[in-house]
Structures are given as structure tokens and as C-alpha cells.
Length: 338
Image (cartoon, rainbow, N blue to C red):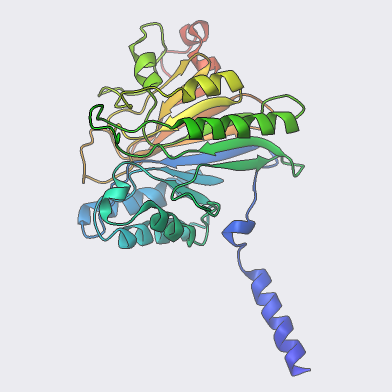
């Protein structure tokens, strides 16, 4: 009898604990919304007092926005030991009990830990929802967001590794998305579209290094650029065609990256929104914008979303709606006090 009571007590305690990350399901709420909080370029240094601002930023942004998912888009750590840096970041976000994923930037792999080890370490986080990596040291993956009243995917998020530096020294600069990755994206996109009866699901994509189209779109004087552009985009020197693939597949509404610390703008290029997150780091690297994060709110069953920047000490700025905020006739009608 005592053994039965002990087992019952153990089961009760386990049921009272939060769901493990692998068991957590992302879904639209009863209002048909799903909120994403994007942190980028933390450049966290575990031994640098300036990085305390990073942890405060994470805590304050999550408390203010109460997101359904947090996505870190690379350059998370900026010093050795890498494991200590990641553990500090993970402890900070885990205590907020919000599902999260961490993508890599070009500086993450410079801190003495291979991608595979970093990925496995991050997955030990209580609320981390990254899938097992299989044979890939840093796999691309899809996060499904189910409908508010069903188990089927209603929207999808592509999380992609944009690598670091070009391996061809004669080319130099940053690495580009590979053909294998683009083929993976096409296969996933086609599969989800077919399962949805031939209608592409609303989708977003996240990675660290911007695509060449970010520079092309910003140079177009006809584009409506909302936000701050204080430096040139720093994409790869070669264009391997991911944007074209996404445009052809017709599911991706917006692409969000980091990498360029003094940019936080959004604009539309051939019907796809290209957006930077707001620099979320401390003063361990160059930055001239107030510390903050980007917020994205998806709408169930609709190919639209709201997005804005939340600053640590400045409230909300650059609130827009895709795609209506980027249509010239609508822009002219906006009140000048907004």
C-alpha cells in the first residue's frame, strides 16, 4: 500500500511540472493570434559586466510582451568559454517559461565550441524546442503552429542556418545558403502545401545573415522602408537563390534576420517582407540604436501579421501591418502624429 501511495505521489508531482520542451505545442490562442519575440546579436560575454544588460533586456522584453515563442537569430555569445555563455543565456530565458530556439550567427562558432556541441547544449534548456539534429551539426528545421481549435498546422516557421564566412578565399565575405538547403526548403514547403489542399500555409523564415535581396530592396527608391537604416546591408557576395525559391513557393510572407546592428527596418520586396530585428546586446560590439527586440504577431487563417520594435526604455516604435503598411496609397493616409 505504501508503495502504491508513493507511486501515486510521484505521478502527481510529475503532472504538476511544466511540460518538457519536446512536449510543448505551439498554437494560436483563442483570439487567433500567435506572438513571436525576436532577439538578435546579443554578443554576450559571460565575464563582461556590460553583458548584464543583455539578461535584463531578455527579462524585460519577455515580461512586457508575453510572447508565445522566442527566437534568437544568432551571434548569441561573443567570448570563451562558450558553454558558460550559453548556460547563462539559457538560464535567463528558461526562468521565463517560454518556448525558445537559438539560431547561430557568424560569431558563435568563434568561441571554441563546434556547432554540434553548441546545438546539443542549447537543447538541454528546459523550454528549448529545437529538434534533434541527427547527422547535421546545425540543422534547418520547421516549427509548426497549430490552429486554435485543431491539431493541424495553421502556420509554419522556417529556422535556417546562414553559416558564417565564405570558404572560398577568392570570394571572401559571408557564407551563402547552400543549394542543399534550398532543396530542403522546397521539399518542406511543397509537402505542407499539398497537405493543406494545395494552399500554401502562411510562413515566416528566420536566420542571421541577410540575403542579398535586403541590399537590393533598400536601394530601390520606390520601396517603403520603415525603421532605421544606418549602415549598408552585409549579405553574402553570391546569391544562391533562396529568396527566389520562397517567392516561387508562395508560402513565406516575411524573412527576419540580424547581423547588421544599426539596421532595424522592414520593407517589401516582391511581396515578401524583409525585416531586421533590433540589436539586443550590450555594449560589447558596435551599436547606435537603443537596446530592444522585434515583435511579430501572426493572425490565424490570414496572410497578414503585425510587427513592431520594443525598446528597453522607449516603449514601442515602428508598428506596421503586412502588407497594408507598405502600400503607397495606405502610407499617404497615415496620420502624421502616428
